[in-house]
Amino acid sequence: MTVITGGNDLAVDTPSPGDALGYGPDSAELRILDAVVACAARWGIDKTTVDDVANEAGLSRATVYRLFPGGKPAMVRMATDREAVVLLGRAMERVSACETLPEAIVELMSAGHDTLASQAELAYMRANEPAKLRLFFSFERLDDLLQIAADVVSPSLGKFLGPADSRIAVIWVARLVVSHFVQPGSSVDLSDPAVVRRITDNHIIPGLRIQRELGQANPHNIQ
Image 1: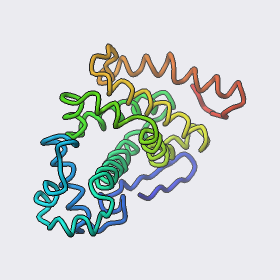
Image 2: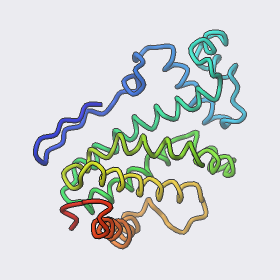
Image 3: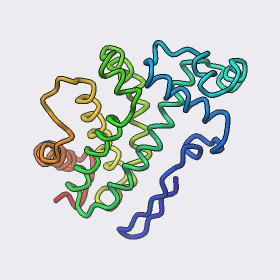
């Protein structure tokens, strides 16, 4: 992904699936990761086996293990990271077009919700394996994904916030989006723009102002 900044302008080149992990677009590695996503969406991650992935990718089991010596856990982790980088790159494009910080936060939250809702494997777990979905987003794994989100998306807030403050905003929003996604019965509907705007105006923007007042961050142009 290429980010070019100049003044308040930000140009974003969304990463391709291959660029996201350094694989070529026709590589066997990407065929395997695509197969992981397809199988997980069909049967769930727990029921997906290495043989399932190999068959879906049209490769031998030996080839799959040669390319991913860590087996299924390594493949699932890499597939998740790849999906996150590519989809967050698209979210970055949406945020970069915004004219004010509140508008950008609203767009970021909506894009985050859309990103999670669009993932078939996560939708399967949400509908059929909610406990496994919560485990998937728990502890170290969630921290890893939050850092990926901050790395990819925070430059799109550069015309409103400094680098450190942009990361804070992205991580806050990402935590909020994930927490509501893993609770299907939540009364907060992040697909509703009015709800997202209320959260932004009542919580995110005031929180950034408090950060500034406490000297823990230095956001500017918070309007």
